Each structure stands twice: as C-alpha cells, then as structure tokens.
Image 1 (cartoon, rainbow, N blue to C red):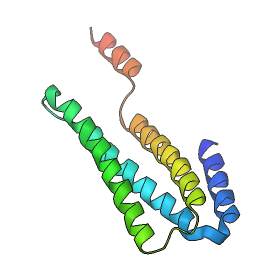
Image 2: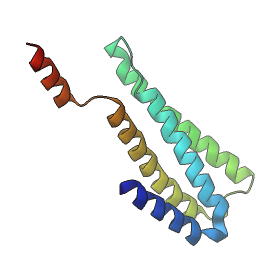
Image 3: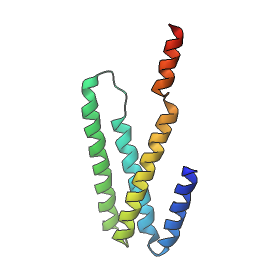
Image 4: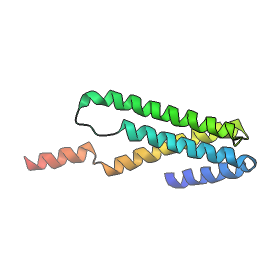
Length: 123
C-alpha cells in the first residue's frame, strides 16, 4: 500500500509539474543518486569499528558533493526551469529514496528478535 501511495504521489507531482518537467526529473535523479551514494558509504560493513564515524562522514560528503555537482551542472546547462519544482522534487524523492533504502535493508537483514529466538532455541 505504501508503494502504491508513493507511486500515485509521484505521478501526480509529475503531471502537476508538466511545464517544468526537466526540473522535476533533475530533482528525482540528483536526489536518488545523492541518497544512494550517501548510503553506499555510510552503511558499508567494516572489520574496524573505529572506521564507522569516518564512513558516516564520507557518506555525508558524498551526498553533498553529488548534490552540489548536479545542481551546478544543471544550472550551467539551463536545465532547471523552476527552482521551486526542483526543490520540492528533490525533497520528496530524497525521502522516498531513504524509505526505499531502509525497507530494502530491513528485508535483507534479519530482525534482532528473530535472531534472539533462534539462538534461544539452541541453548
């Protein structure tokens, strides 16, 4: 149901911003790339717990660099026709990409209560 609501809102927002479609698509693509790059760095597995904070900072800087570079290239090519549509699209799709990433990670990794019950049965 959540995915259906996200799809409907995305389609309606795309139709509503038909005059500024480039701004809408740029908000979608830049935010998705930025969130993906951030989470690719931030949630890497490492053997050394000391590197966790470094990976979080790398994720934050990756998101910042991707966003600034994407906006700079888009502005220099005159692709952003409406800054408001771009900003709203970027904000919405950042939240959607974050939700999708966390729901994927939650399905991929087992929940701690199932791990506790699995290990409790072995004792």
